[in-house]
Length: 105
Image 1 (cartoon, rainbow, N blue to C red):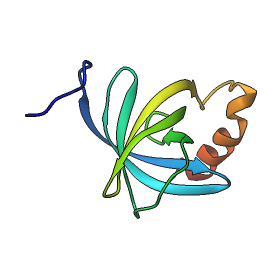
Image 2 (cartoon, rainbow, N blue to C red):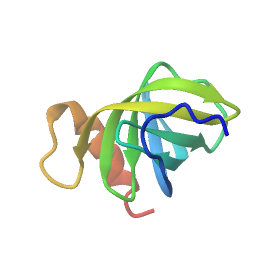
Image 3 (cartoon, rainbow, N blue to C red):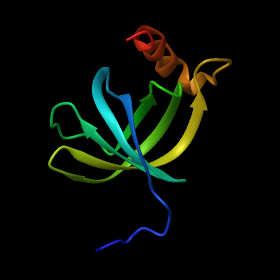
């Protein structure tokens, strides 16, 4: 097994949204670690290097950097995170609005 990561990865299956340049792209968050995660986009697209990931189950937004991409799977390094269900920093205000629209579904 070719394992290059030094951090434990926890398999999960949370619905999420990747927000980039006014677009909201559905995804599944497939695994997570202390500093990153792997997502599977609902439809394969090329992403810019910096995105916002919203975990709909945990009501958390993450500013993230795309580290790798292969066949619809994308590895993200999570840089800054915020809970969206309470007071939210201004930098995550747009992510909170997206979460509020999607949290029921």
